[in-house]
Image 1 (cartoon, helix red, strand yellow):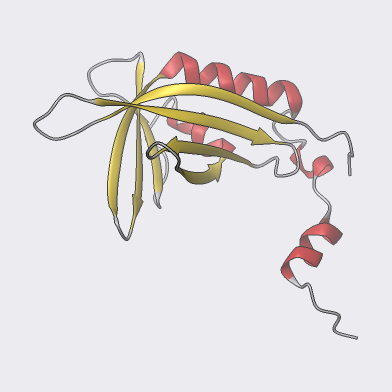
Image 2 (spheres, helix red, strand yellow):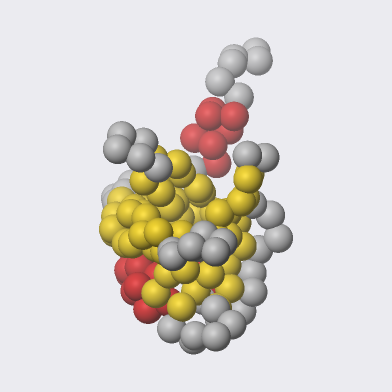
Length: 141
């Protein structure tokens, strides 16, 4: 396991698509932490002092830039009518939100994550012992 952990942060503005109304720009912080090398986090500003975070597979972001990807709470696909845009859909029991983002901006962020951890080398950054300790904090002996 590698110990030279880093966190990559990038700010973006995604357009919240609202039915029968103009889109609403939403500030989003994209994060990648080598402590969880398989995932990216998108933190959406939800008001003056709040953020809502969605964590999803880095591979989902990569796949969604070129074709429809995801079957759960996060789905990503290229926009139907504009190849320069990507549609990001997040859903929860409280509802669903659909955003448009510049494909190049997301691709640039993804490329920067690859500069930190190449695809296929993620396991070098993960400690199974640390993960088990997190999942099982109690001494079973």
